[in-house]
Length: 221
Length: 351
Image (cartoon, rainbow over all chains, first blue to last red; front, side):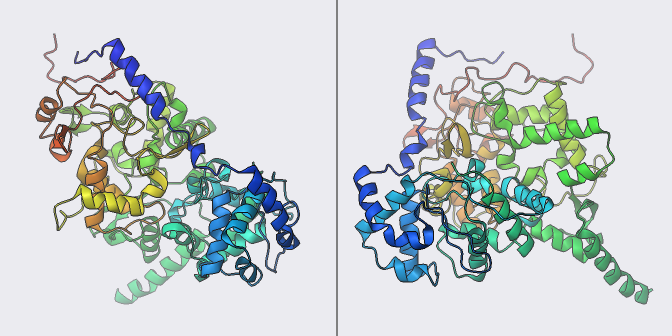
């Protein structure tokens, strides 16, 4: 037997060091400052006309849909508004507003929306076969077309991971679809390392409709 | 004859196109020279940017789980294959019992173990039993899988013949449906095909920069990946939650090829070969759990397994004044080598 025995003491120390090194990832999530949330609420009045008072956004099939902001990562929200300012995202309705917030106001408003609870959104009736296809793309992907699953980056149940990968479960369906199309057209290009763009370009219109509908119908936590 | 050929080819391509919309029987097994244009397109979508098959290479596009559903296999058979698939995709369900790090089979064998250049697992089912230099004896499929558990998962193998081991082996074998045993032709995209040697000697220093640029967003600057709410989201590439010093991917050429052909996720063949070698040099010069074959001395262990393994790793090599792997860290497990890993003897002269 080629066993090497480790003294119990060493093992104990190893375990102690180990447990210390298991870092909690929540440290990376934005810690929300109550004062900023309060200030943000006051500044957010102007946002509510589109994103709604509860931050749920609105689904406008055929028109420009407004995303749910409630419960999204604060720093992700900040980065998106900055992307509108610098042009790596573009929207006829949002772009004019992006420049209206100074950095402190942007942080406050983002803190406010990040603090809001999420509510289920109304999802248009969708064919069960389409939903099934959407579920497959979201959770397993389609490797024959090198489409990796949404959850491989957006995390378990597509609730989002840290600053870079937003929660997409319970997002407005037309908004998701419009963003994927914006990536395909090269209009949205603020994703790190083109991680989303590379996948978006492999999706067809059927995929986009299916995955948007399925994701929208999932609870956001 | 010539006219016939001209006529048949578009017709075959057309019918393949028509039938591909049903997507029920995607499976293909043939030599490179016999592939239809449609099949070539299909392959290029499975391995974007990778070289196409050579004429005499064996190409196999394994069945999908949808094909399984649509097949007429016995429901009990389907159930067992699904169990194997589930273990393959979510090996973390064995955490603490057989798996002691943050890996799933699918962490390295991308695309459900089906894709060329991504460590496809079906070749194991048609080339084993076979001789492996790593342990210097003839191995069967279960024993090969046991090797993954011992090294890549820093754990211990499922029991030979157990329900789960059967299911996992069966998944490999089912993926190999229609492939002849012991094929003589070279298999297209088998394992992680070796990259040409780098132009400049691989550098951990350059690798660190390339890692920060391409890998750290998911695997983090400290290599630990991300775990949230107890679920592994992005696997650890070094440290206690990663593969140990005996894992195949601790070899530089394996990690370089894996990186080149599979990373960043969704963007195969987007880094240069030089970057892939540099990134491998950087990642594989970080510490990780002990090689289960450890003799108590890393340099001695390196020498013992040099030709068959460690000449391709940095284990037992002095880097920045420290000998890599010279430590008692087993990661999260409390044993070195699992009991069931042992040599074999076919001489017929066993006592």
